[in-house]
Each structure stands twice: as structure tokens, then as C-alpha cells.
Image (cartoon, rainbow, N blue to C red; front, side, top):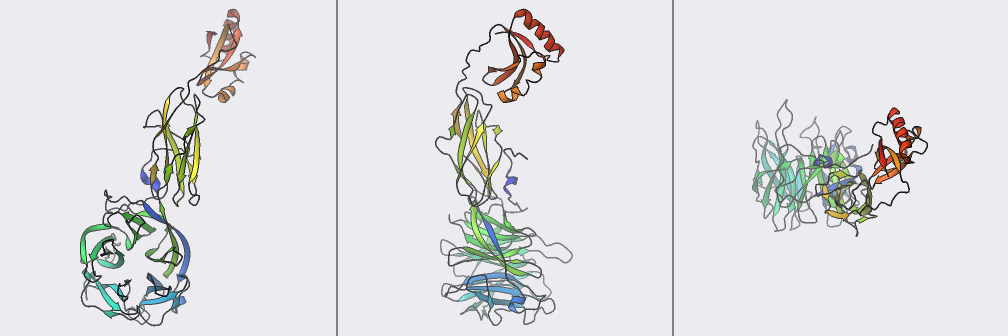
Length: 483
């Protein structure tokens, strides 16, 4: 099916707008997301010595001083909710994909985040319950460790649940440019017999990773936020979208986020956690499967397409046509482009849509515009969109040449049967019918943009007879002309 360009809303962008998400603000201008190369499961329950029906979930990962990756994970058994096989454990890997379990239990509960401190110690943040008979969570508490293996509880809460009665999930931490830290966590309502409430993401800031001050408002909606710094200094939150997979949202200030955009990692996956491999690639761990397993995917940043123009951008200009060109960089995601054109910057016409593959890099693309008016200034631009956003090129102009018709060789009288088409080839297809009127029927150019089927070089007396025959044969618009 031919695809034609239209000025459509951003629903074409495969952007998922979650109800209740924080509205974009002037500071929410970072247009960047992720494309994932899924590597499949890297850690399973049986793979770390658990029973077949017991899974692993809720990954958090860090790079050790010797370059190995330590992956912390949670386990839980419905039969033994407080047994020795439940809680937080760890495994290490030299390549980030093949893990060996470390002996012992790191912590007695699940849903944790472990942060390497500036002094070389480790702090484990976890959700603390609200107490017997109470719903929801009291807040985020912590434990400290010298080696990242044995943790000792620290007194008090790091910060209280911003929405008492809701379940608070831990959490992702980002170091800010001013030296402080920002923690993102999700508060969600769970009621027996009712579907879960919206997963609202809140944030808190700290200068020492111990004392946290809650920031007002909801950042966005999504599960288990993992914060990252974009190359331009903006903040990206990678979140689980219930039932849909992994999504991303960016913010210039870390507080006001654009709408969450879906990525190509879809399905019932969540709990993203990131490490940077020695070769510079970004590796994400995530929950997947039933029973739950931990998968891995290589993450590559993608952004809205970049567009520019060669010089000149319009070539092969005639009285009725021109060829227009642009350079489209897909910026890491499959990109669709088209040209808009018209006699003003309102454009009004468009070419068919075409695609530029995600891995192609900048490509010069072109289209031929037909049926233009002579001696007329035309505006055009290229428009390109991918899963991250839309980019409209700058307006360009060209002027069609004047129409110069040479005098025809026929003189005298003719019968003009019909103005057939703006294209000579199309008009010739109509000649089969005119030839039943007269064997000398031909196509002649009536103007730069109009062709007609006619019978020329007739006498006045002969043309009158041909005209009567044409009318009888249903050429009702046939006229007699002097040439």
C-alpha cells in the first residue's frame, strides 16, 4: 500500500503517553531513548541452585574494582516466605553474561538497591514495612557493608513513604552535577481484589547518601525507575511499563519529564538495572519470565532523526517539475521520511513516505515533484520521524521555469475532443477512443500543463462534419477551434 505524507499527530511516533504522567515543561526538551539488543536470560533460579519453581528477580548491578560485575538479585518462595532461600543474594561475572553465585545471603528481604559509596563501602537501600497489620511501607531504610557482602542495618529511615498506605518500591540513584544525589522510587496502591493503582515515581535528594529530602510532586508513572545521565547532561529514567515492557523518559532538570516512550523491549518485563562494560557498552539487566528470570540487553541511545540539505536542495527544475533532496540521519532508530511542498509554508501536498534503516547512518534522499505550475515559487521541506520523535526540516524554496511553447505545425481548423490530462503519457492512453471519430486523432500540448486529444488540419466544412460525428460518439465536450 502506498504511504503518503500527512501532518499527523505524534501518535505516529510510537510514543506511549501514560495517563497522569507529568506534563512536559519547557525544561523537558531532551529527545532521546533506547533501542535494545536483547541477549536473553543470564540468571535463573535453578542456575543458582534454587528449586525449579523458584525464580530470581529485582536485579541491581555494579562493577567491582577488579572489573567483574556483581549482580544482586532477590528470591522468594511462596511456601517459605522467610526461609533461607529467600532474600537478597549475589553472583559475579567476568563478561556480564555468565554468572557464578557467591556463597551466603546478602540481606533478608527483597526489593533492594545497592550503591557503592565514595569511601569504598556499600550501602543497601531497601523498603521497610509499615508494621504488623498496617498497609503499605514505612519508607526506605538502609544497611552498610565494607565488602558488599555482609550488611549491617543502619538506624532510622532514609526517608519516609511519601504516600502512607501505598507500597513503596526501591529505587534508583543518580549523582547530580552539583555533587548531590537524587533517588527515584515508586509508590503504588495494592488492595485485595482490586487492580494495582498507578505506579507514581517520586524523588528525594541528598548530599551524603544518608539524609534524604523528599521533592514535591510526581515525576512520572512507571515501575522500578533506573536513572541515567544523557550525553547532553539531561536525565533519563528507564522504567517498567505495566504489561508493555521497558520505556524511557527524559528531563532537562530531573524533575519535569516528557511522556514515557515505549522501546523495542516489550512484554512483561521490568526492574531495569545498568552497568557499563569495559568496552564502553551499556548493559541492562531486567526481570522476565514465569517463574521470573533475569535477562540482559545491550542498550544503545537513539534520538529523533537529524535532517539537513545538500546544496542545491532542488535540481532538475522545469516548468512543471523539480527534484528535491535532503540528508536524513535515522539516529539509531528506523526512520520514515517524506517531503511536503506547496506555494507557501502551509505546503499542502506531500510525496509518498519512505524508510531509512536504523543502522544506515546519514542518507541522501530525493523525490521528484510533478504537476507544478510554471514560473511559480514553491516551498518544500523534509519531515522525518522515528520512535523517539519528529524532525521537520528547514523551509526551502525554488522557482519553476517559464513555459515556452513552440508554434504547432498544424494550421486551419481542428476539433478538440477533450482536455485529457496534465501528463502526455496519460493523454495518449485515451487516443483509442478518439480514433473512432477520425483516424488522424492525436495528442497535442494545449499548454505547459494541459494536453488534449484533437483532430487537426481540417477544412471548415470537414471540421463541421467531424464535430457532428464526435458528438454522436459521446464526445459531448468536443469543440471547433481555429488554429
